[in-house]
Length: 288
Image 1 (cartoon, helix red, strand yellow):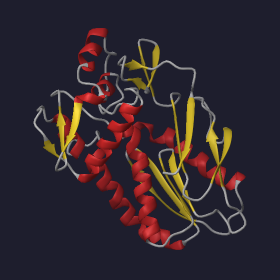
Image 2 (cartoon, rainbow, N blue to C red):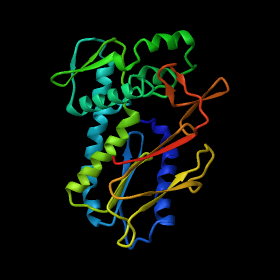
Image 3 (cartoon, rainbow, N blue to C red):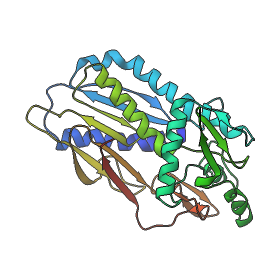
Image 4 (cartoon, one colour):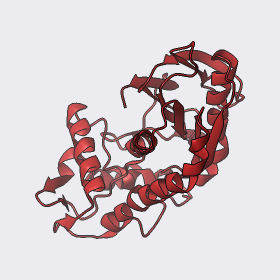
């Protein structure tokens, strides 16, 4: 879950997305929407069905319950309780948390450790967590934190048990949780018979059906990767069809400044430091 103070910047991306629909997509006769706040950012759902507005409370409840499992900004959330329990004894967790931890561990192994959700300690140390910092961590502090980072530092056991192999292991699912939340809302709307819609949470989205009877593809605008870019500054137009999802991430929005230097929020789990790269933004289209 992202920092609440980023909501305005992320909203610019949300606005951009829907500007992309209207400026570059087919003309809609009527669109209905549901919107709100979740995970420190905004969500927006648009559909040609007026029924979408009747599901507002249920959608809010889905996202509230989701936050109560995965938000590291809520001290009473399930992941916060697991993180703060300093034990290597197995802890029984919810089916949702267990399943996402299993998926994240698989991605960690497949990427040889470059994708790793056990970095919450590093996230906090660099100031990208719930609390502000007065200075960035030094090499010895980073080395200490790396002792509890790695695909092998936690394991999944039978009967929905998740165990730390180091008492200081802390998990952060913010890189994957928003996409799962999008899928859950997507599946909920389908279960209610809504066919044509787009659901977006903080820059991650999924489309269903088609934008109009005459058009198959949704046309979406991607913001120019520059911290000073406006909401209407479009760098690329992407085409999405029924069921496809889009996730965009970059190192030009979520940054901290310390000692005159800017640090991006993309951390390298192997070095324990923000990853320097000339890639400012990346967008991925997938089936979920």
